[in-house]
Length: 452
Image (tube, rainbow, N blue to C red; front, side, top):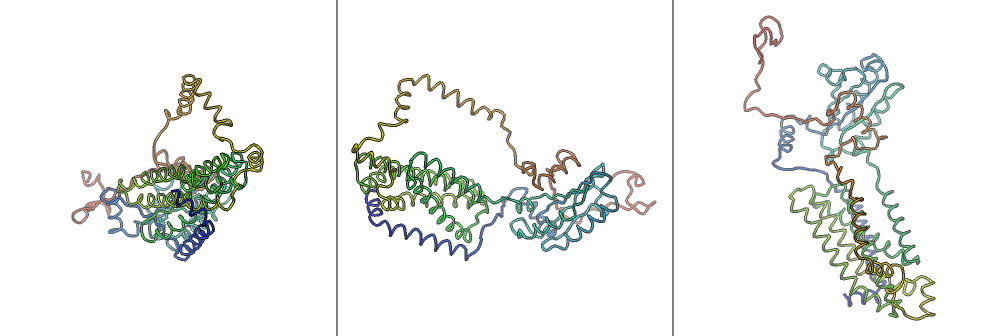
């Protein structure tokens, strides 16, 4: 590690330019290749996989993603002429939308079950010509716009379903930016130096950019889910800033102790840098442990996250020493540099709030241990009322159309309606038919004498 750190410090501009060029080349290649992310999910051998296979083979038009359009009237009934005409016209336009295979309206011959008992809520099924990952987002957006255009005073129209929910997912860039700003504020308070604050952020963000571009290219080779970049970003920013802090803190303390910036960087990488490699390798092994589950959907997620951690490790052990070489003594704040010049080298580990806290813990170990135990029990208290289950659109924000559709169906059709099970059966021969009644032109159980 010492030789790597010294070479990167002395050849700082070569290292920095290499990282920047890598970002530009990989980022440009990923942009040119386009998105290769795929949310296809299958569990071979399971009942759900067998059911979907039967549907795709026997009823291809029914095997695509199924979403719902729900409408509710404040007064009267959904069968009232103005409402019926307005909704029927809207459903007809939805049915003509590209990638829509069929629309099952409650106003058809078999649609009475799609109207609530009080007659104020109804829904239509919109069946697309493929699964969610196969249908472009523009098709869902067109259906949403068409359906919501039918809204009127006293007529509420909402939409639900997996594809609709996917197209309504908010962008995560805002939350990521807030996280970076929050980290910058904490670092500025801790270091008191703008350059020391920027170094962990620059290292983490540059490593994250390179890793996301690499993951985007890898998505054309293996199956990687669309949410993998989001997960990789969260992990990459966290470990990237953390690893950089290891190195920078040891580097700053080395300079305060009287070392030159180069010797401080070498010592820092030779100590904290080893901790970074060990910690990063542990995280990668833990993430790749998902491969043991043999769930293909998670394999790409594990590889993408582990690759991001790998790039952050590389940045902390190569890019960071180069950046430390560029700023030199300015890694310390002006006040710290003035003190170093006036008082000479000093041991940074023996001063400040943390050494005093450590001394207090040594003097009062039992009392503080008991207090820490009480705090942990209180913080863990909510775990006793934890309820595990699968998340559905009932957990969506109250203002979202998917949550409103979920609530309308639950109120109109009763609890459990939002969690149906689809049964698919295959008979060994032709499907049995019920005999026609001899007294009337329909299959009538009372006239046949016994139910069939």
